[in-house]
Amino acid sequence: MSVSLPVVVLLCGVAAAVVAFVMSASRSIEMDTVDPAVPERAVRRSLLRHPKLIRFLRQRMDRRSAGGFLVTASFLVLFVVAIVVGVVLDMIDNNNALAHADKAVAEWGSRHGSSSAIDVLRWTTQLGSTVVVATLLAGVAAWDYARRRKLDVVLFLTTIGVGELLLANVLKLVVRRDRPNVLHLVTAHGFSFPSGHTVSAAAAWSAVALVLGRGRPRRDRAVLAGGAALISTSVAASRALLGVHWLTDVIAGLAIGWGWFAIVAIFFGGRAQRLGDPVAAQPQGTATADTVPAGVDRPDAETAVVNPSAVSSSDVNTPDVNTPDVNRSDVNRSESSQSR
Image (cartoon, rainbow, N blue to C red; front, side, top):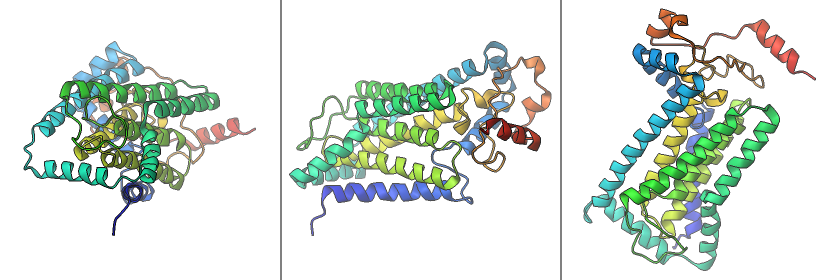
């Protein structure tokens, strides 16, 4: 029995969505696919184990500048790692298992592409196109700014969009991997590694899920995480089955896109959306959902990164830093001020 291309794409997307939903909804799994609270705490502990770096950042930069510096440094690290992976994939022998998988998927997709199936996959793959992603990020940024009148979310989504675009296109020019030598079911230009549509979808839709999930219950955030994973994985599968990318191109695209999203989200404090939050003396993004009641935003103390002389020794030397508990009276005052 022949399986149609849209069914394969849907199955891949649903499988990824289920995994993302379970990870985000479960309280026993300390990992949320679109809210990097756990890795953010790990990054903060790692930074505090290097007091010289902390002193350097706090002495010469405010919170936002320090966050921008760390995002840029992380971008370069991710870029170098992706280059190495791309070059290795381009050099693999034809008898390698990865090469067989690449060839099998590309050939199977090009042979089973009916006109109706190609139409469905063409619409699916557009969810990772530059036009759709740019419109999505701009729309969500404008919507959030109209509600909160804060530029941090605009800066977050802009960083996501510009970064993923640079990563995908510069990597193509550096690695220069040829596209599969099969019938391309849609028009494609340029080199193959990584899949630009996949990088864009993985980074952008995850970022949108994070922004839309702020202040919402855990189950709603899990649904958004599942939706982001569904779209990203479906775009990746469609690119491979349309014959325009190797399987390893789209797998690498997912890894790069999700990796870039995680880096930017961590240095923006997750749902706190404060650039440089892990470097701040009083981070807001490491608070658990139970610390602040649902629907009440964390106070956005626009404190600059303080001078080293104002930092206590416990701030610098203690490896495990927890966010201070929110005083109940402060929360009550916050709720009172927000009521209409």
